[in-house]
Amino acid sequence: MSTGLHAGVEPAAFRSLFRGHPAGVTVVLADGGNGPAGFTATSLTSVSIDPPLVSFAIASGSSAWPAVREAESLTVNFLSAEQHALATRFATSGIDRFNGTAWSRLDTGEPVLADAPAHLRAVVTDRIEAGDHHIVLALVVGAAGGGHEPLVYHAGGYCAAAPLD
Image (cartoon, rainbow, N blue to C red; front, side, top):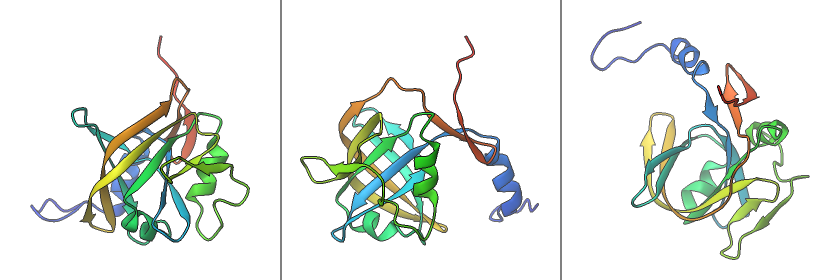
């Protein structure tokens, strides 16, 4: 491992560290004008309450990146603990992720998962190139649902979050 000011940690060490850091699981859906696209994201972050901003990262080589790059707005769909198959579907490359997936469009046109217990509608405000990913910053303009047991990604697999009492 290098300790230089501008050197990075080895990829294996970086992955190993973050495998031990649990993250909530969402599916981001967007339509950049060529039909819906989506991907599983564990990088969703609440950035600001006033104004309500969120961010997430997407790989520059992701099949969903062109839609996210072109879309003015999108949805972030929160998954519940039993929806690991849906998370796996939207994390799998080379398949039609929407085939057999219940989804619809909001009145404003964004795609949304029918079975997601909660979702945000957000207007993209910025896309920032960051290494092999892009960070997307978005203003939350709508929210629905909630009160579910969330799906969590930890140690290389999906699990449920459990309260400690």
